Length: 311
Length: 311
Image 1 (spheres, rainbow over the protein chains, first blue to last red):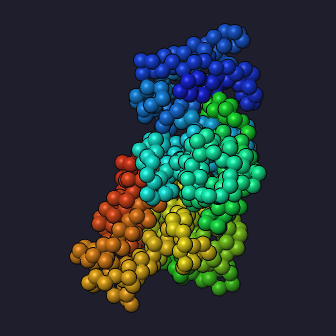
Image 2 (image 1 turned 180 degrees about the vertical axis):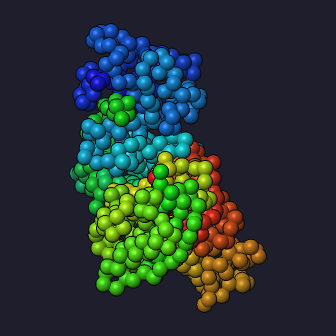
Image 3 (image 1 turned 30 degrees about the vertical axis):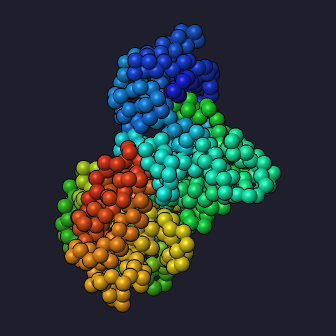
């Protein structure tokens, strides 16, 4: 019977590390710097060293550790093969095997958004559900889909890339993915700013929003204060995201949508705009799905990574 | 070691039955009438009787039969519970248990579109793939999603209900599901007729299509002959379905889309209109997915039902 495991969340600037007991309690968490130079060749050795140092510090024997789960910022298939990871400079290789050899323990890697979704299911806003969709509204829009308690990785690790569902024809701005009219271009923090600037450019209504400095938080604060222009932006946001989630529900029929990321700090009012636009267009079998807020914040990744290795 | 299994596909007018060996060869297939009177109370007893009669006829011992797989025209969850089946008059009950008691063998039931998708994976157009989406373009648009070789049933059996993804605002006609602007309203046989009638009503171009009698087959035949109005309809169809499938790919990242149903008899030219509209909007990780035609036709259901019970 194993007693411990490690959950690792690799980001472009820092790597979050967690030591867990097998009941899912965090015993320790810390961060190390992500060294991306030389195509990120130091990232896995740095993780291995951090794991070994922590085991030495805590006098943990290898026999007591179930292994290391890892969330990675790019597509990872079900075998642990990463297919390019732009932020880290990584090309294609098998993370499970490469890190496994360094730590001499089982390693399981997954895409960071999918892994975070697993974390929210296990210890966060999605507890009690085995079929759920976790939507992360940050700089971009990320998604993680859990079916029967397992991550949906897809054929080449691009499962749950819901930020790049096409929702608008004729969008002049190009998305980071190279397409135009992706959900992420309207429902992310930067997307809300895009919608706000466009609304401000053509309105003559009084508003507290300032086109030169508006942030997603400004918009939601103004919505709460009844600002008409902000409310118009929230309606547009709600329509894009609500209809996008309805399409996703038509595919996977989840029990719950769990909404996280910085933008979700706006709280229940954000959910209300999404639900209002979701219900009229979704298939009736998915109409009564639960909308809830993520609760783990930036720790979702290390929790999910721990769950990934615990199975 | 079991030698046989039964695959059953329950429709609103007939029930297709198949006797298979466990290698997936059809040894016999036949149909019985679907008796929907009295809330369809005879349907399961009729299936049980047909199974027993066939076993007697072929001198098959119960010990040699793996069980009975069943596809049902309505949502069925992963436990075999059917949640209303309008065409059969069924309310909510557990098909696995009820039919299992009648045949005294294991029974596994699934939604008919999901089960048909399993059939296409096993012995049809989706062979060689474990992550695929089967799209059935008939009177409506049905979908079946296979992840890691298993049906995606969803929280209450509404997984893969892709015909009811909202793709158009402002649609005046109401879909059978009660919503407006569902994919099915444009990409099914009746949807193509809808698009054709609307195109004909506002065109002054010469065309072989006749608004009073146009069928989906007429449209595709005319496309092949270079009819400009038919080609316009095919473009619209391709945009709705291509963008719809791109959204689905953004969720599940399949290896292949397998297109079946009566409308798919138009053949490769239909796939070309779908692919052309799919590629520009799909996330790059799903751009090289395979588009292929279903091959089992009306037998997909019995094959998939057999596969369901064989596991």
